[in-house]
Length: 84
Image (cartoon, rainbow, N blue to C red; front, side, top):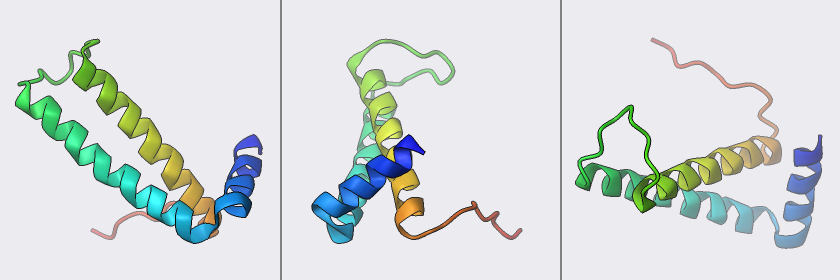
């Protein structure tokens, strides 16, 4: 419930359009972080504490937060499964 209160405050302060743009920007940063990991020949399954790994972890967290906020804003209460 704390998160939803924070989401409501963000929307009241900056508006839905601004938060949607923030979500788009955060999601655009995730592929960049993944690309940096790939360029460093990162060995998947062996987390490290280098800058690229830390950046990737941060970008994943940002995207997860924005996805939760989008679900709140657009009243999406459940995740739908892809049809196979």
